[in-house]
Length: 231
Image 1: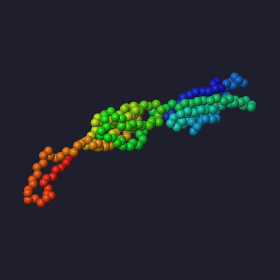
Image 2: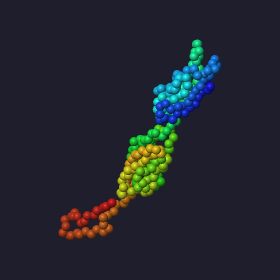
Image 3: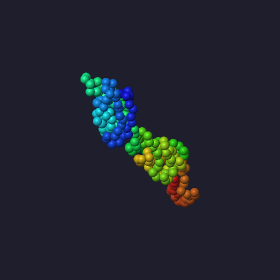
Image 4: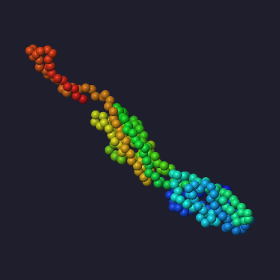
């Protein structure tokens, strides 16, 4: 063979029959090398490649490749002459499968986040992250509903933070709808924020001044008035 190792690349998703590379051997016993018989003898998992016209040395795809199943192939190719007895040479062909952005991000199942109403703005409260089996895309996170100005999310890391004070007496839970985009596909998930109470309210009477009436004819003990406390 003209090379001990051949290096080639093939893009996943291309049609069956796509050209990958061509190998070539030289037979020192003959001026004519067009009668060398080429064959893939090892490493051809799932029959992914084939030699187009056995005397050409042209390697083509035989299936639609998927990098998420296999990202590299190490093929062993032989060239056999028509002598008597026939002689065989060997070479390696390393085929790297190039990724394309063909998979949608996926979020794992989320769990509610419990948050005290006394938490200070700027506090990191959790991280939401999606998985993308494609190798190259950078995921970008954002809120689907921009009204959630109470919270913020880092667009690259997915870190959730509290952006404004919260008060359980006004709102006791929030539902955040978060998206992750790889530029071609978008996935969504929901996460619930549960606000817990802190003892930040002092008891207050319903009235500033209460007036009761007492008679000397009353049998003791006797009710004079009723006071009530509100929150």
